[in-house]
Image (cartoon, rainbow over all chains, first blue to last red; front, side, top):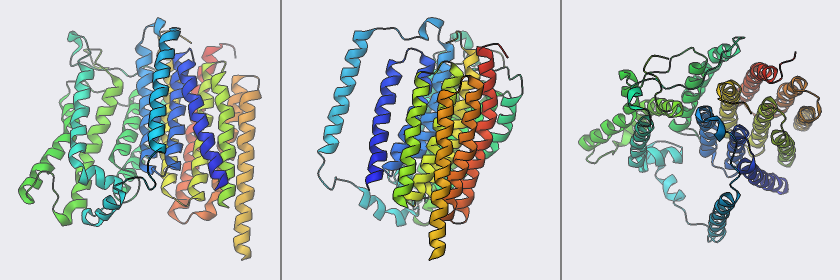
Length: 312
Length: 88
Length: 98
């Protein structure tokens, strides 16, 4: 369809343009705004490529959570880092390197045989046995469930690594997102009205992820964004990093997977195997603690290393 | 009808380019944030149009998620800029 | 048959007007003299632009899907108009004259 082609070409050009601008602009705050816009455009591209699950993830993580992460980092940088240093030759070489890699990847994709080699038919063929309708969910939580389990462990490790950046005296303290004085109470109003909607949409995305695009990770990102909103508005407290409930929540995702894995060992005979009729129920059951754990991990990752020994 | 909807989506995305120009030469921080917000709304409109053009209801879920997350991103921008140790 | 035609015409008209308001909002964002007036132009795109586009797409969605489209529009309207307050305050702080 001709018009669709125009949309696709337009998007591609737009993305390259925005990427170039992000690298070139002097103010890092403007670059962060550009990055969020870039995430939005990228999610449109994923939609055009019929990868709706990835589009959801890009919108949630790329635009929302990563934007917050960059902003929080920016607010902690000293003044002289807020403008880019004009180290032209280094940037030029880095840009050349990136362009070379992009070109190599593009050539590989164009050189793929037609039809491109893919496991999609086999993945779809296995769906009735798993009991879910969304092949992405089946891959994440059934065919490659072990990888997903390891990802949850990696997330916890990343968080511990992030916390270890704190000064020794601050260990166990409270991280800070950013402060806003909120003179009109507008932020408080937003934080009272948006999170319930966000939580509802997150639960919906988690539930519908079994058969339609959606899933646990997107739901986690949504929950994380809503939680951060309430913290910034002062409606909820940022938990201390040595808070027991927080730590329990953070490990509950990987733990649930471990439990499921060993249960599979006992019932069906191999680690992370699902008994045939209960597969879908078990998948949804393990997704719930996983979603909450990943949401907590994302919030704590954005908040960064603990900064104060006292409560915020 | 599909072609028409795609054409409007293309038009909205074209406006997005104009809005991007505003982010580029935005005089103040607030201008840049407003452009980002306009881009978010344009993106949502484009998604709704695309969802109808290709008859894929899941894309509307993307629009819904984007609406919430774009709001969160705008709030993050508007509230964190005061906390920075300098001003742009 | 005429019902199908009416539906098509309704969609085309509504979506075109929606696109027009998007154009108006974007042009306003570029051309208006100061930040607060630009903010005003922006909300026109959100309200009417997205609203008319959503309206035009409703005949093609059934049941819960139509409700979702309306929800998206209501959500965008609510959140963007409230966030505009935050942006306006920021704009006021950047150039501290009324």
